[in-house]
Image (cartoon, rainbow, N blue to C red; front, side):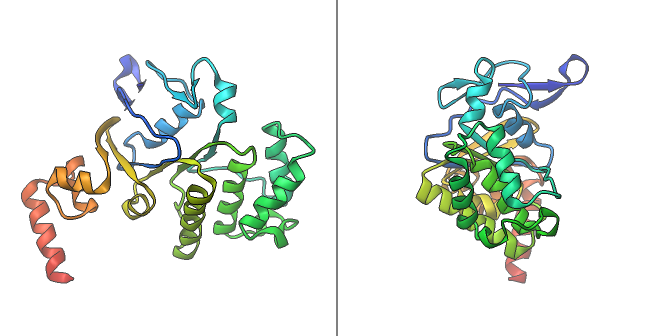
Length: 253
């Protein structure tokens, strides 16, 4: 699957991506800013169309079965919008209606999600008064409102303070462990992906350039940490610079 922009397709946002994520897996897509992570998520969620190729999610083709794809996926976008003048309950009610959640099911599902995320006692408060962490919880709840088997999290801890980031990480773990969801995480923050994901892919300039477990990728690059492997794979520094950087870290530890 590819997505090109510009005259003659000179800008290769996603270039011949070939990837399989297994059911029930928590998979991480790592890459520098502008590497193609968000474009990949937008393609897989039918927000934009590929220049060539296609993908299937739960057996549904993103080009031929857009509505079916949207029914089986939930998306936490990198820069999502919230209706600040709505309460958390009202916002989830709106999202449930957009996803055609039956009216006899929706109220109980909203209550269950608000309780799961510790927001039930504040369900009638306007979102404009919520902290970043609380808003992120509401957005995750919105992604779950139609109970999709596949979840996409694009930079889930972006702009969150450490406490809020920890809350979001714990929620993602809970979704993977207890609900058995297939989770696709995009991030440029290595510790997040390393902690949450069983397998990772590394994308750079639109190309998938590494795929495997953390240990496999470290072994392939003959480095000691995922951080060092990432730098070596993406070409951030020359080998001699990587060695000097490693020695400096050891000296300052």
